[in-house]
Image (cartoon, rainbow, N blue to C red; front, side, top):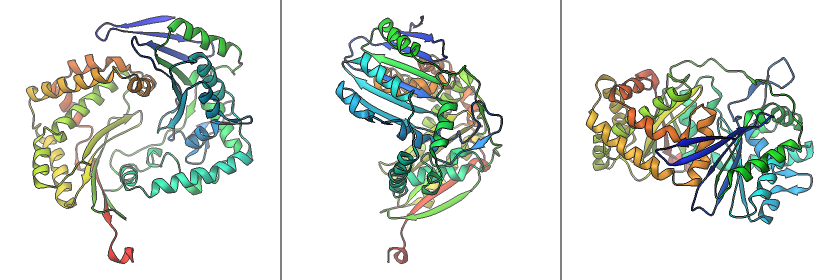
Length: 434
């Protein structure tokens, strides 16, 4: 078992790659009573076209199948797996994102038993046409529920505007129509391709003895037989650099409009240290341009153009990336113009200095140091970084080294009129209400 020391953070990460290809990371945290364990596959909603394991021809599966598969993993022939976790006093959960599916539990006792339960239920699929068809109604209701949520619609509506072909534009849960086409055979095809141990990572953090936990995992995996690891052939689409739709408006039952401007990233091929540097540089730029200490924020706040719903963010994964800024507002036209103007001005000349950058760097370092004291934060973020060949614990030193030239260079990825799109949700008209 390899030990990886992070002197600045006074942390020691324990790592081992098992013979079946599974990566296992364990981070003991003194003084914590709780333990989090996550078991994650590098498989998300964007993986809709691929060559199934053992085959030669590519297939395209129904939209929403990664999320559907996550739901079905908890249902076994002997019953619901949540009950088994609760018997050990553990709280279990799962989630599907664009790029990964994670299964997890947190507990203060019976960690060995819960870890074995986690590994066993994820590695023992059970799908029948009858149970699959029953799940369609449940997930269909979930999809309809999210369709009625304005915040969800403005988020995915903004992403839909940005992308021509990339499957990130498709809702993670799919549509009622797309999930209706899912069969048990589809689920087994996706499971056998993406749930091989060599495409997965187990991470444990908290009140845990590294050697005991690693031995528990070794023993569990030694009892199982898996096919030899093979590279996964994911079929990637060609995506234009400009946005698909410049502006779109939707009417919903809201009290006041929601106005969002999104910026599509051009540089989406980075991995590892380069990706982390680029991502952090853009995040710092957004802090300076749109953060609560920025000139923009002060002006729009004083004008009453934003409220407590105001937010901005930057998301980056291999193959796609975007920034998004917006708020509920009674003045959508004025706010949209102001948000776009900030980025346009920054593309000509940065409205901040090295001193300004150093200030937000100190703030971001402080935030991350506090976050790294939260085992919930680390458990949720560690695998995302690892799947992109990054290390969560490298964030602070990378921030420390960033210069204003780095920020200026990174910002060019999302500047330019061709990278901008606007999505607005307006209150229903009187005719629609009637």
